Every structure is written in C-alpha cells, then in structure tokens.
Length: 403
Image (cartoon, rainbow, N blue to C red; front, top):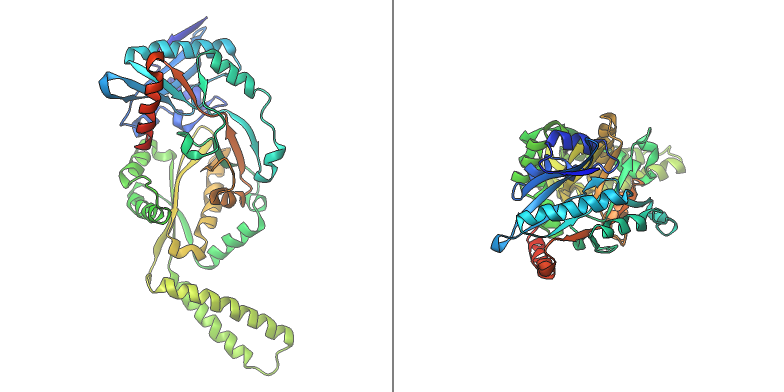
C-alpha cells in the first residue's frame, strides 16, 4: 500500500536519490538552498515503510496568493511502475492544492537514448519510452513534446558527457590531444581552488557573457554554490604568464635564423627549419597582441563543477578569448575529468546542447567523444484545471525573467 508523505527528511531524501538510477544534482536537498528565491518542500511515497519515490519541489509565489511548482529532474521513482506513478502524481496534485497551485512542472531525468553525434540517426529511443509517457499521462501529466531548442525547456533536453574510462587520453580525438599538448607547451597551468577564488572565476565568466551576449550568473551565485556544496564543489582555474612563451619563441626564431645561415645544411634540414620558422612566426603574431595587454601571470579560463551521487555536473565554464590560441580549455578538460574520475565519479556531464546538434558547443564537446543524452522532456501536471491555460501564460512570463 502506497502512503504519501509530506516533509521527508533531507538526509532520507538524499540517501534515496543518490542510490537511485535517476539520481540528479538538481534533486539534492541542498539545491533548495541554491534556489532560495523559491519556497520548497520534500515530499515522497512510502510502501511498506520504505521510500519508493521522493522529490524536491520548488514553489514559486505568484500574484493573488497563487503558486506554481517545479520539480527539476524529478520526481525520483520507478516510472515503469504504473500504479506508483499514478498514485504519486495524483497525491502531488492533491497536496499542491493547499498552496493554491496552478500547475506543477517536472522534467524527470529519464534518458531515452544515448549516442555519439555521428550515430544520431542510427540510435532508436528506449523501448519503454512510450510506456513511461503513458504512465505519466495516466497520472494526469501532460507531455510537452520532444523539443529541440534549449530555450523551450527549463533544463536542456539534450546534454553531453563522458563516462569513466581507464585511459582518457586514448579515448578523445587526436586533435584534442594536440590542443592539450599545445597548452602545456605554452605553460598553461590548471589547478583546483577554493571559495577564495570565486571573484576571479566570476570575472572570467563576465568576459564570457560579453563575448556571447548573454546574461549568466554573478559572483554571489557562484559563491553560494560553493558554500552550499562545499567539498563537492570543484572550482578549476587556468593561468599562464604569456611572457615566458614569448621569450621562448623569440629565442627559437633567433636560433633558427643562425642555423639557416650555415652552409652545410641538407635540403631536409632546411625544410624543417623553414617550417618551424613559419609556425613560430605565426605564433609570435598572436603572442604580440596578447603581450600588449598582459605581461604577467593571468587567469585565463575556469570551470565550476558540482558532484552528487556518481555524477559530476559542469555547471559553468568560461574563457578569456584573448588567450584562445593557448588552448586552455582542452588542458582543463583533461585535468578535470581525470580528477573527478579519480575521486570515484562514474560520469562527467559537460552540460546542455541544442537538440539539432549543429551548434558550436556540440561540435566542441564531440571532440572529447562525449555521448549525447536525450531526455524524455517536460511535463505539466495541472492542479487548477480552470486556470491552467492562463497559468501557462504566467509561467512563460516568469520564465523569461529566469527561473
């Protein structure tokens, strides 16, 4: 017999979520502390005294004492259990009426297929996809479709990531290894830092905002993430002193010029030297522009990841575009992935991409042989059926202001 439970203890909820196949960072009880501009509750279902379903529910206050609710990457339960799904969703709807809720939005972290980009057209949906949608609809949920644009959903319906591998260097494409080695050759350093370096990371993210013409998060938000998740928050920064590489290039160009002046060189030796000279001359042109603005050690890229369960999520990453030729992001990925796998994580999520898989992020992440995870999508659970259509409009307005 199923029993709906209000006020599930955070520790009980986290223990259940971390050990569930649908484990998701956004369903951690701590996420409520990050989204502190929402109210929240943790509600679940027990069967024979055991928790069989649980969800962190975010509650947004609307005008006229109304609310809407959102369950990010949840609820956590067995969606093939038709009776459980119907009971949980019906119970959620009844419970939400106490808050004068208009509707509940949820997007369970159900992967319906996983594939390399090149295999997109060869990979079918999981056999139980329609069964799960039917079970949710049987409980009153409304599937909002297999959308492709990231802007159409709260959480990306398509994400990319890498499962733990024994030798990451062999797993990625050859040009990624070359870019990583180029970063090392140019003396880029990647280190993990604590909360004291949040301001530096925020400055890097601001440069990314300007470059992409988008509004991201501010330093207070990044600080909050690190305060909430503490040891499970991983902040990595890349730094470099461009003058070191500048001196090396100039010295090597001088050496090549002297070597080319010798009379006893073979044609092969001359060819090699001229090729090196050409490459270094091109590198110097880009270095000159950098050295006009930077003459000491500089933080040039960074990433903030949060670990939960067996997965680590890369939530934010940015780079100073002036240092694009230093390839810091490639070296950073190598070091960060190896670090989290050594920490015991089984999967590193690299974030969302457009469902068309033709955007720049998809192309970049594909270089790491990252797999695309396509999720089942969003659902609405109407609570106030009379006002549901109007409430959808209210939600759209709220969404534009950022959830």
